Image 1 (tube, helix red, strand yellow):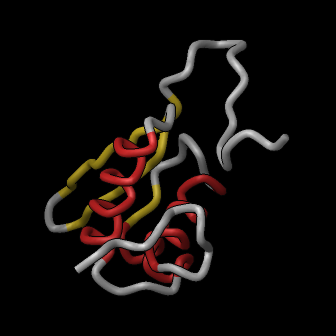
Image 2 (cartoon, rainbow, N blue to C red):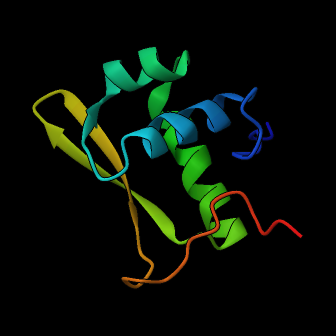
Length: 92
């Protein structure tokens, strides 16, 4: 199976990426993330986003926190303060 591109909002991975970016730095529960992104299998989609971020060498990473049986996710930037982020690639 091939994960969809995070730059394509019509893919499940793209929708999860956008939902996390819309709340960058804030924790969001797995159920809320699945509802916001309109996806199932949230942990699988988060894994797809992580792999795509690594492949594209993006300055974000996803953190996971587990409290009992509940999982919470957030995306954080690893760029240095003041460094310009290009989330969708450079536009010429």
